[in-house]
Length: 300
Image 1 (cartoon, one colour):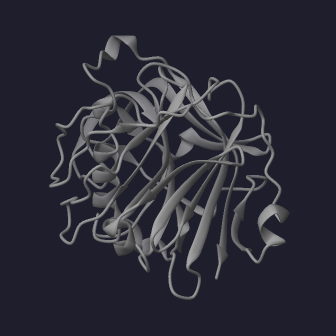
Image 2 (spheres, rainbow, N blue to C red):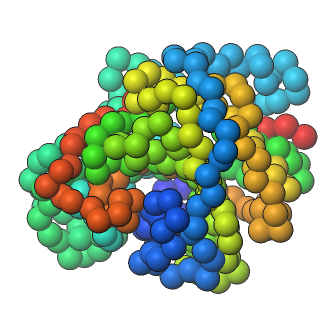
């Protein structure tokens, strides 16, 4: 995918960040949507393995092909970094806040004064007191007739701290007509659960998915060490694995609409906004999300 596609993705980025944001049972959000965002809560607490290690051969020995692999040992040439603010959030996304340090990606939320675009792609400028980063892959991915199964894998140590939300997702152009899949979203002051979600609609800016979001409690603090999050996207289901174990399966007519849609992968660490009920800016705590790798596998 050429970088010229990114201006077209900006609206999708802004809306996806807004729509990711409803906390448990909060149904009112400041973004156009015909769907509901009342979240389900998984009754089963998922077991975790601290510093879990994923072995590629788990998939490649079973007819899966690795089509993307960034272990962050070089540069960030496989990614595009946004610049600017996001509606209802308090930070300015800055490319410099996404850095490779000691063989891992670090996305840092910092308290610092900068001037930047009011929103991503905006020509107006404003002053910000916080910065963070939001990056998207230069490569697009799709569950389609040729490769009907896609597995997206990331090894991540979640960022802790009030006001922060670690986000790993994918989305396409003209949001949500090419869909969006949330692999995880973890609030920094509630790091013993993660939420998942997906979006779709036939018209740009209008999500029609009902009941897509689910919160999954876990048995440990996701910010204390690394965990491996794997999502399998296929024509009829989206399956979520944590540290090698299946945690959740989503199914429904809207998921079938995501089949054959092209999406980029995104990592971000927004500050504040609609991720938090009754958000108190004075309580913000800065922090860092650490990522060992992101890998994508396909299978027929």
